[in-house]
Length: 183
Image 1 (cartoon, rainbow, N blue to C red):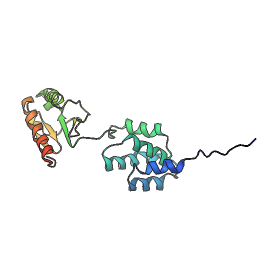
Image 2: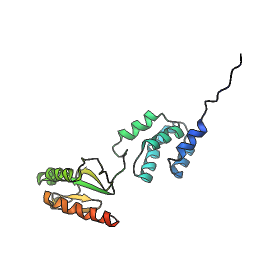
Image 3: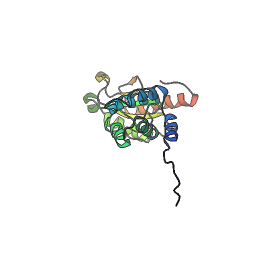
Image 4: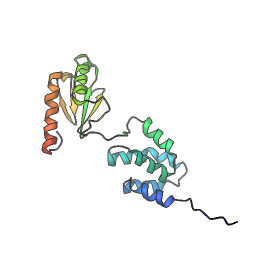
């Protein structure tokens, strides 16, 4: 009776696929730290580097980290989803922050928020299908005298009313059509 030897080690294939999903500086960092005692303590740094490079952490990138750093995928995903700072989906070209601080809230931030939700067709934490806008809530943007305010990228708008929202958004939409830059 003959037994055929079957090679089930496909590490080189897995490694080659994983390398495609990460920038060289992250690959170098993983390589330099993976054999240290408690190498998983570098996980947050690795995820920060990836997010700084790509803007978010995709499933493919999380899997690549798991494989290359030899950290279980459940742990990598758990860290990425636990910390509010990490984003698992791409952000829009323009980030809209609605100030929800006390002054803004009292002066109508909730109505501003609802108008943005209606106009954009997304909720807080989401990005429009065209990738142009991401809607977020801010605790305070420090411009209480202009309340209520929204911030798009670094530009503060205030005081704003629900009627101002379409006009403000239109400025960014027209820029995108022309191929213009931010703001």
